[in-house]
Length: 128
Ligand code: I3P
Image 1: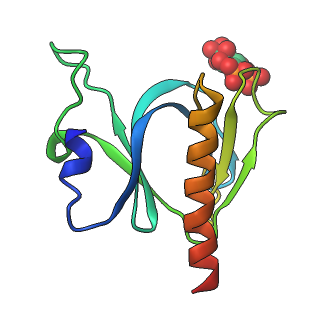
Image 2: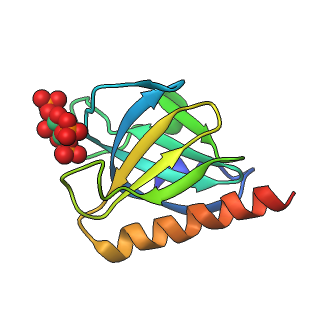
């Protein structure tokens, strides 16, 4: 949880490990490449931290030195992705800029909690 702790200036609503792949960038389809990410929902963003590939593969690298990408949830859309993957428990996130991600967990309850939390942020931003 080191990555989340450095985000003290923003409200961390949820953090955890998920399987993740980006499937579109600016509306252009990408080749799927599933990987494990440390995902943090904070403020108006979903932030992805890559798993460390260094000598201690079980450790998450510090946020300050870790490649990360951040998704602005304003105007985003979240759906279940039953037709976009052969995996189960997959959600599909689309941003206004045409970036699309699939997020997956083997635990149905885990992905349901993430779906609820992300939808909550999207709804809050829709009302602003
Ligand atoms: C892809 C890989 C993905 C799979 C994807 C395949 O093959 O097996 O795991 O997505 O299916 O194309 P490759 O490694 O050769 O790129 P899912 O696991 O989500 O089904 P898709 O082409 O039907 O999206």
